[in-house]
Image 1 (tube, rainbow, N blue to C red):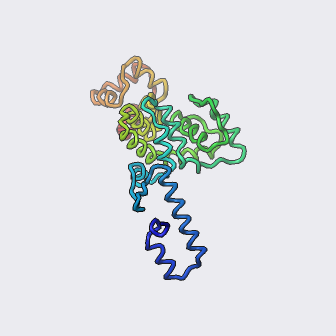
Image 2 (cartoon, one colour):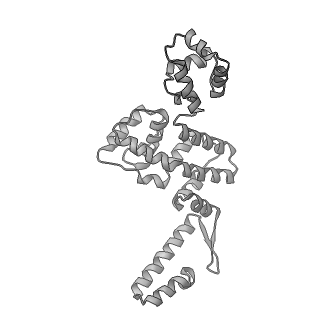
Image 3 (cartoon, helix red, strand yellow):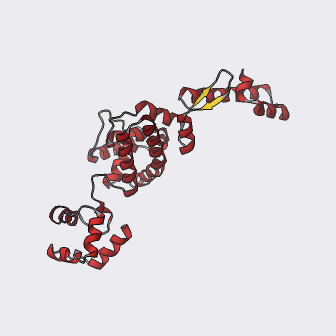
Amino acid sequence: MELKIVHLKVIKNFTKFKLSLEINEFVIDLINSSLQALEDHGCIKITEEFNLESTFLGHIASFYYVRHTTVSHFEKNLRENLNIIDLIKVISDAREFEEIPLRHNEDNYNEALSKICPYSLPKKQYDSSNYKTYLLFQMYFGRLPPPIRDYVTDAKLAIDGAMRIVMALIDIAADKGYLKVVFNLCYIMQMIVQGLWIHDSQFKNIPHFTDKMIKILNDEEKITYLPQLMDVIKKGEFGKIMKRHKINLSVKLIISFIYLVE
């Protein structure tokens, strides 16, 4: 039975190089335990003929290069009514983020960061890398001040690995038919790219655009989206708006940055 599961190629290598029986048994046990773990997490099926069949979760884990424990976690915790904040928590609990560094005394820094983050959890685990990741996402989206410089590096590490994990979660949600969840995950991808909460103004990514300027454009000029602003610029009315509200900045400089963002 074991010989059929591990396949003939592995066994032939042991025979060819005359490796010891102990090593042979160790590798067979290692392969069997690995296959059992993959089957337990729903990534493969072992047929009665001891053939291996990849499941949908196995395909997703392989395609997006995420751990089998991560796709299993997504499968168990994905619900049809999850909002963006709930999904950020599900993403933060991915096993890949267990590798986010948790240095000495950082539980205190995590506690300090949680006090300025807009969203908290009933159960706070300041000594957990996954909970730290949850806080790092909020720090990144909200552009909050990091407790120490190392948190900037840690946030970059989390963001760099987040995109493929989110895409894997999108496929799993789509397979379940959770349309609202898919839309929310697409919003999260947009948040990752822009470095903003979905409800924040797009204008925050334009250099020299202050909160005061954004409020004037949104509330008084009813300009809330970049295409609207581009239309105003093309009509030559942006300079008039700046002058009317006594904003002393170079119109040409700001327009050049707007075209870069576009």
